[in-house]
Picture: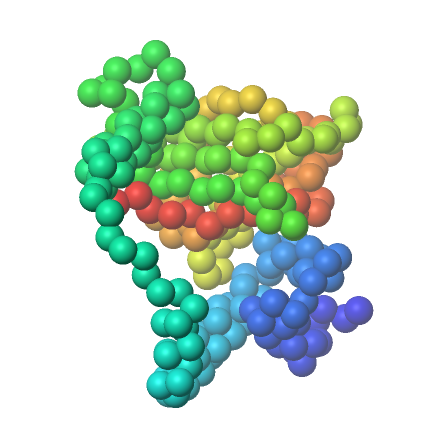
Length: 234
């Protein structure tokens, strides 16, 4: 297949955004995205076009008989007194406690007053949507200090291969290697100056399968097995 053909590239980008590009073809296209900034721009163009198309469609008001049927099927039960364990404030406090426990689990032995909470979070998932790693970026004084990772489930990895984590910037810039991920457990990866500079423009992270010790070229050479979007914590 000639991936240099402009018509084919535009068609594949459109199918990727629509979700009709699946299986091995989708994984092969995602690997091309890591190596081809122009192809990433085509995907972004398709996303903008389809988003604009969706916004231009006027809303459709369902007939009143539809609402009557829904109300007849889901008649609300009589209200009951709210008990203390059902109150929103209780569960909000419990959720905050759970978040605090998760942060302490990822950053063991560090007082909360010293170690800041994660500034950016990504969950890396496989082709079937299964979660593989939780990745968090912790900042001090506006500069990323470290990247922490936690394997959500062990991954199979042969002894002659390595998982390599990449930052995916927007626009023309090539992926930036962050380091190697073990198939299980948790830990931290030091951020190179290039990775720190790329964080402000990074939109996603990805994991490729590389020869043992990582890519020999400084760019992804193997298939992209996992990826995730970076989400800023507010």
